[in-house]
Structure formats: structure tokens, C-alpha cells
Image 1 (cartoon, rainbow, N blue to C red):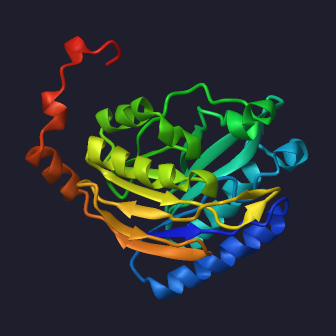
Image 2 (image 1 turned 90 degrees about the horizontal axis):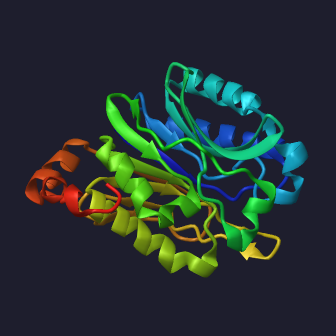
Image 3 (image 1 turned 30 degrees about the vertical axis):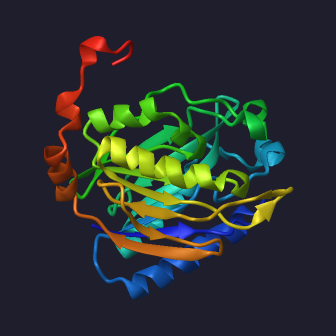
Length: 265
């Protein structure tokens, strides 16, 4: 499957302009890459940016507006859209919600970010998700999605691998101050779970926080296939899900697990 990852410079507090940017980007990507269906990936909170104190009026009712917008783009171009994440309002509470749209324009999966970043005051403005991360499929490939800070919790990612995920996708607004962690943790998650890790991070800055960029493609062996820089960019890649199976047979980590000796398994 072909992927295009958008390392985006999000315009803080301007959903209209950010949708225009994404529409322009998808038009450009689809002109350059003719393979269908292709999968495009957006970063975390790409409609609003990190204006947490403004989310009460920027958050969308159950994400309906963005789901409709992305569904139309998916059907128009016959592409799968891993729609990064957006701020959604559900029963008066605001969540950081990932949205997955298939090439038929159907919303096939959503995920509310479980782990909120205390260093950036997310728990003050956002509600943590309460449902377990689950596996979804696009064109027969099993995938999991986590959001930014979730990357620091290996048990969450291992659970997705045990559920059959062959690819992990990470939309993020990871800051430059912890850029080395961003890169090393992605490689670690790929190596220990023997699957692809694809990330779409933001660039630029807002309110004194600079975003790290360095969106990455890492294969199931842990090799970095592609690493972007620190400016707005598009990462194209192609993955072969068979490689996940081959690596897991070559180094049979999952067969070697001693679940009887783990406290949480």
C-alpha cells in the first residue's frame, strides 16, 4: 500500500484555512501519485492547532463537520484518509479524536487519545479516552492508531500488536524539546512489536512551543526508511505487510513471550 504523510505547519485557531491547506495538499498528492486506493495521513489537532484554551468553541460536535469534509475528499479521490486527530465535543466534554475514513467515504474507526500530556496542561482542557485502542483495516491491512504522547506507553502499542496490527500510525504535535525521544521511541515500538511505524508530526511553533517535525517511516526490523526534516513536507512510502510476518517468523518474539510470568499480559 502507498502512503502519503503530511508534515503540516498548522495554522493555530483557523480550521477554515487548515481545511483549505489539506484540500490543496491532497490535490497535489493525488496528481503526483496515481496508485489507488492510496492512504493519506494527517497530524494531530490539524484543524485547530494547540489552542487548548480555545477548544471550547473550536471543538466540533462529535467531529461531524470534519468527518463529512474528509468523507467527500476520500470519495472524490478514491483514497483512504487517516485523518490525524481533531478536537471533538461529546456530552459537553472535549476529546482529542482520531478519525479513519475509507475510500468509500465511510468512517470506519475513531479513537480518543487515552494519555493526556501533563507537561502541556492537556488534562485541564481535554478529557482522556476511556475505550481501548482497537485494530482497523484498510485494503486488507490491519492497522492501529495512537496519538502523540501515547507513544510513551509500550503496553498500549503491544496490545495493538497482539490484536494483529501490521502497521502503527502516529499523528502528533510532538515538541522539539523532546525530539530525540520522538525518534528513539518510534524505533523502539517498531522493533519490539515487529511492525511498521508511520508518523505525521507538525512543524512550526505556537505560544512558545516549537514542533519537532521528523515524521518517520520505520519498517518491522526497526530500520528508518524515511525521516523528514523540520519544515513542511510530504513523506511518500510504500509498505508490504508481508514483511511484518517475515520478521515475526525470523525473530519469533511473540511465540517466545512468557505470559504466565508477566503481571499484566
